[in-house]
Length: 364
Ligand code: UDP
Image 1 (cartoon, rainbow, N blue to C red):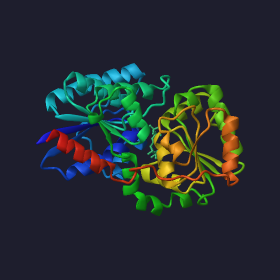
Image 2 (tube, helix red, strand yellow):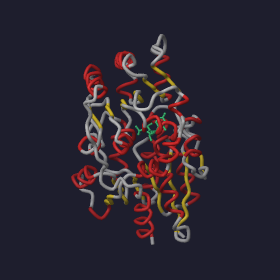
Image 3 (cartoon, rainbow, N blue to C red):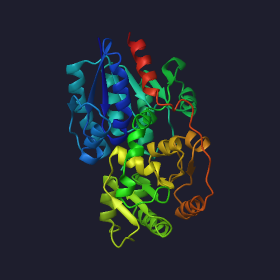
Image 4 (cartoon, rainbow, N blue to C red):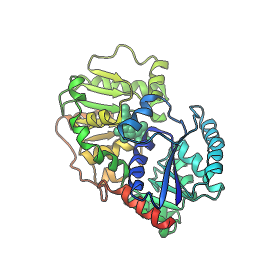
């Protein structure tokens, strides 16, 4: 019996590991699977609610590292995780995404000689000012199994000299989770409870440092949302980082009635709001993919994306951080000038099954 350990720490990680945990249950005679939660996200609304909504088992290990600077957080995860790996001696460590927990786990496991599987490997924004880009590059370098979601990721890894045998194009586990909960998403009454008319409101999320850490940019962003709120109700669930910045900069006051700031929402409620939105405006990675899958128009307020398939094939509009351009694109979309989209290859709800198959065979 081989022992697999997944390391999760942040909201998008939980969503990516849930379907893998489920897929591995089919092989319970061959492998055991445990989950270690680093505590990078510790707020109930950023963590516990996802375990409930996604029907995930409680984590077997909880490191409780909390916040801090990048170095503090990464270092604390490394120190605590080393003890867990030394005691449990897993045969393989699974790390999803690109957060500090991903990087810390990859560094510790690789130095202990434990093979690593990186879920969502090969994505590149080619922008090293993004902490996530550093996390992705380093994690990929030390990983044995590189599970990719789109063709661009395969090309990036090959360009970096990664051997073909390590690269597995399996599809997108984020879409597996979405597929698995689609009925609940469609049945949710969140729009009704919030007094929203389906396909007649805007959903916004922002948490990247380039948008929320700079007072001028965040202020301009809020002004854009205020102007758009004259056209349609705008719902803006706040990431804890964004909430703190808005308060610190004094930008959370005197908001129009049509601009609804909320706490972070649970998975099902948030997806349901996305499903029925006329337009989503975001800087999130995962939301670019989910909107593409659900054929919802999405404006990405970033200079680049590591998920180009959402532009080339999907409904994503990458407009940069110039807010005049964001507003113009939004107005165009609200007036009916939309972009048709298709679902990218292998985003079919079966990625986790493919990952489990590869791992079980590889470890066999
Ligand atoms: N999400 C959520 N509630 C919210 C905001 C986002 O459940 O209030 C989900 C969203 O549907 C997606 C994931 O969280 O599945 C994206 O996480 P985030 O934007 O924090 O991270 P990123 O994808 O940018 O790494």
